[in-house]
Image (tube, rainbow, N blue to C red; front, side, top):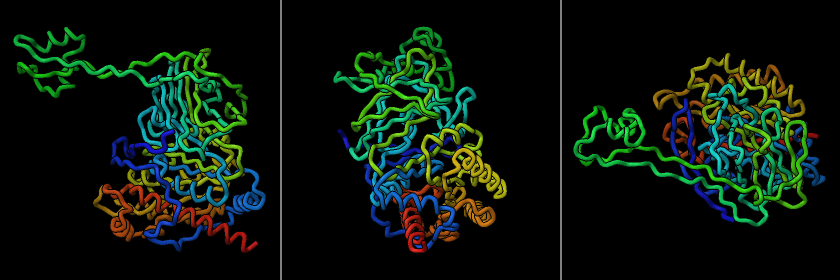
Length: 469
């Protein structure tokens, strides 16, 4: 099985591409020596006492699972910092499985490097930043859908350490849209056939109207796709007169061995005694429309699962508008939920009081549906607004979060803003190659440093908990 691959990191802010970056699937598990500050401790660590007790029980008995979840925006969707935290905790406490995954690739956006998704069908998507009314949005912050009754999604888990024994399919309203199939040995090809775009070389006497009639497209289509500002044509000019298309392929259901599924409160579940590295989601032909919120993948071993849930461009208010997000979080059975949002609010110039109000709503809804989960909020690291001004909204949010935590005592806080230099952070992080060229996002190295610092702070607080018992 192939262990390395190319990933395109596309960070979206206001729906526009900020930058792209590729990398090998390497995980940094050693401390990042270039971190700005390693002295920042967690505020209100007593909030994490249930989580720390569960960690100690796991470490002592080598039984059970601890499930950690981090919710955020583009930096979480890209799975850089989350990959580091996952690696650190799984090395110390054991690997309980991959956790939550979503097929971002099927709707042409970036996601985890741990699982490869392919399908013979075309999917549309809706995300909480720009929701489509008919698509309820749940745990991933996205919903993908298709009406293709022959739809099959291949799920290929890349690394042996992540192979699964338990698969949970999460869908809106827990409707069993998909069956699970295992290959019966027949070669299965799911790649869609690509039909190349048509081109036409202009001949003497031809006009836009005559060419449009010949290929069954509009004059406006030809002008738009060829950058033409008038109807004048030069003889010999090559025109694009048709778009590239992908043809969905038919897949025989006889290629799969279907497995028995069980219905639970918020998901459809398959348990296997043997570990699974590849399986298929197969559309149930009795349905007419198919939606998917995501998958939970776990093994039979004790240890940690760490699930990253991020949406490019997302804000707290985007998550807050969908109760299904909080309800479906119950499938993950989280022991710790880390909340990392704020950068996109700052670009909306949202007042700190409004940001804190949204944080209060988020925490309240999460506590209502997941009362046993401890909540840790991280402040956003330093950045600029449009590379021209210091982003003072970030510092105001950080102060507001700390005031909120000191007043309510129901969340813990890790202050990334201070840890990464506060008002001097932009200059320092640029020098360390932590800050990206847009001075909003961070580089892969910068995100890994954030993940390492948060993991270290959590482990230090855990050790303090044990020492002070």
